[in-house]
Image (cartoon, rainbow, N blue to C red; front, side, top):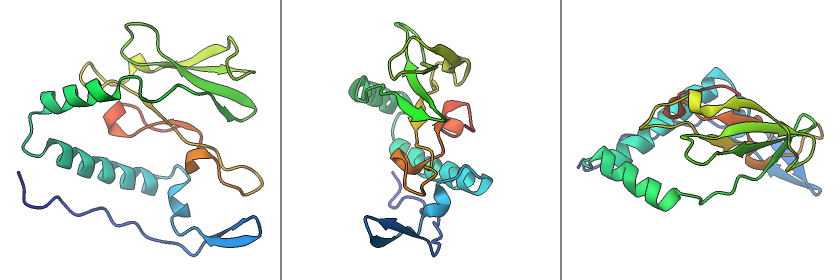
Length: 160
């Protein structure tokens, strides 16, 4: 094992503020909210750091097995509202990854818009990390991201 992990990617700050219930709150990391090339590069560096720490001196298969053991079903597939529609992840029994379904109601029948089994591989299946779109009012969406978006390289699909 290394004595110290690699350095964290620098996260610049911006002079941004949010008005929350009449209180001016600083939001120095607002630049991380939109899906930009700069944000994707920063996310990749963060993922590389986390991977290097998780696997440092460890057997990758053993770490993966540990994560699979304790992560199975830990996050419910709750629907997310964006652009006037409801999005949710639906994983069929035995599927390697979920499909994203869009519907007019939170748990409506809907239709699949992307099947994430087409991304990733057997050892690194695709997964979703939901972020919320920035509401027109300037408030913050759940997760502070830019809509439903697959994560960088780990998943085999980028963008949103």
